[in-house]
Image 1 (cartoon, rainbow, N blue to C red):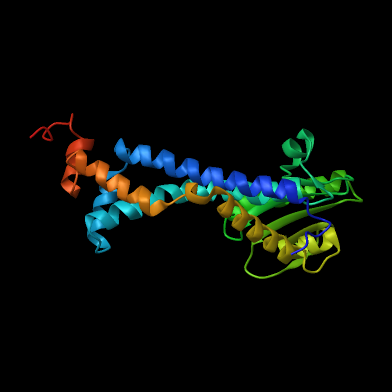
Image 2: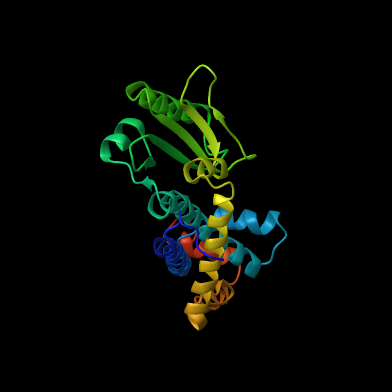
Length: 248
């Protein structure tokens, strides 16, 4: 697909490649943690007993769970970064906008700010109130400007005033937000297509060096076996080996 004019593809490539590196770093870090037994043996016990999995399956599930936490943090940063670094007309806000209004992205011409959330359910009542008050303060200080809460993974496509009695403070799903910013109805769709293309390019470029989590899991199980850790009880004995009663 031809790159839309509103996307800086070189910068987008860099952001996708950063995610690949985050995945690699996460897998390597948690591989080391597993081999050093930096896991919760109680969680491991309950996962094993209450989900009807064998030892190897529980090891795999725990490894993937540990990676998932790191990946989610990286993906939240990615979604914010592609907006402020890769979409023409959007920039990273200056320190004043960040500190006073908690802005994540801003208009290159200074006409709006936005806070970006990964999912619609990442805010509780208190945090949503804080975001709204920050955006409300911005439009009060800048009466001719607009402020947005942008949600990447929303319940539905939406765009409208966050509260009817507060002008210029909007709540928008990312597709509707990018439509307004770029004047392209399919801007978000086109962005996702570019991301998918770049991901394929990176996989092709990395070739045999691409990440293989199945190999990682097999390596973990093999290394644990070398440490004589092949069952749940072994995790408890090793984790608590200096504790009273575990030296038997």
